Length: 113
Image (cartoon, rainbow, N blue to C red):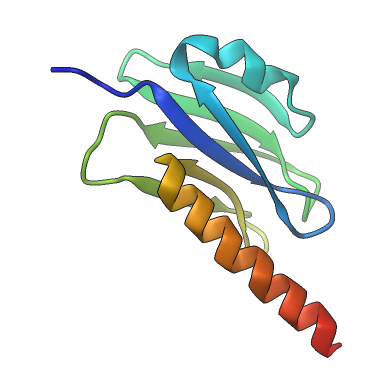
């Protein structure tokens, strides 16, 4: 079976928008260079483990993402304090669509205020 090793990761920024990163699973060290990510690795169960400093509550959150799961083509995890999504992992087109819609809603809300 052939697996696509490229994934997209969107991380919520301090300004409320999302920044999109496209990486290969063979280049996980690139994730550790991202400001809010404090650790990233693949465990023995083929899950991506990420520790992230939350831009909302400033605490450290730990998440696991199943890789190579066709049923889950996008996974969204949020801040445990606020429930607001802070990290989205999955196939490029789905992650891109999610952040595009979210960013336009954020701009609309700010325009109304």
